[in-house]
Length: 294
Image (cartoon, rainbow, N blue to C red):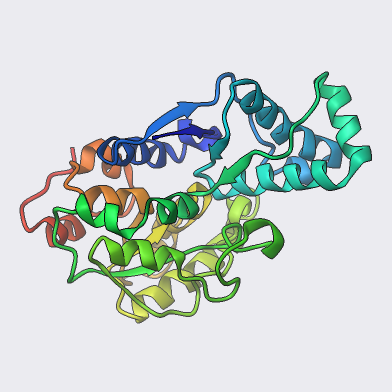
C-alpha cells in the first residue's frame, strides 16, 4: 500500500519529530509514502490573511503537482496544511471564477477530485485490528489526553470530524494501542496556534488552561496531531513553568510517536529526544525498562 505524502514546512523544522515518527510507524505497517515532488508552502498560517487568491493558489499548486504525479490520495499530517489544502480544493470546486484565476496563475487545469487525508482519517482507514497486530508494548496503565485543537475539527464542513465539539476518532486510535483515554474539557480548545511568536502572552495563557485541565484530570501525557499544537504545548510549557514554579509538567507526544512506542520503536528513532518537556518517566512507564533519550 502506498499513499501520497505532503510533509509541509514544519516537517523540516519545528515538527520534524512528526515526520520521523510517521515514517517509522508506516515502515512497520508496510505502507509506502510517495512524497510530493517539488512541494512548496501551503500558505499556512499567514497567506489567508494577506491575499485570498494567494491562500487558494499556494495549496492549489501542490494539488496540481500531486495530480501530475498521478497520486489519488494525499496525506497532510499537519492539521494546518490539511485545512488549507482541503479549503483550497473546495473553493476551486465550487467557485468557477476563482478556479479560472488560479488556473491562469498556475498555467494548467485543475482536477478537484483528489482525496486529501489527515492523520486521524488515515489511521481510521488502517483500522484498530491492524494497529493492534503490531503493538508490543504495555500501555494499559497510561492515561492519555487526546488533543485535537482547532483545525482537525473546524470548520465543520472542511475538517469533517466525527463530532465538532466532542470528537472521538483519536481516542479510538489510542485505545487500539492499549492505552486509556480521559474525558476532559479542553480537547478542542485553541492553543493560540500561529500567535506563538507575535503574541506569546496569549499562547501561554491559552496553553496553560489546556495543560492545567489535562493534569487535573489525571492525564500522564497529551497526544496531538498538529505541529503548531505540539510546539505551543511542549515548548511554551517551559515559560508556563517559569511563571508558576513548582507546578506539574506533562509531556506532549505526537500521535505517531505514541503509536511508535506501542510498536516498540526506539524513542530516538521517533524524535522524542528533541522534546522540551522530559519524557523519560513516561517512557519507562510504557516500556517497563530503562530508556535513555540520546
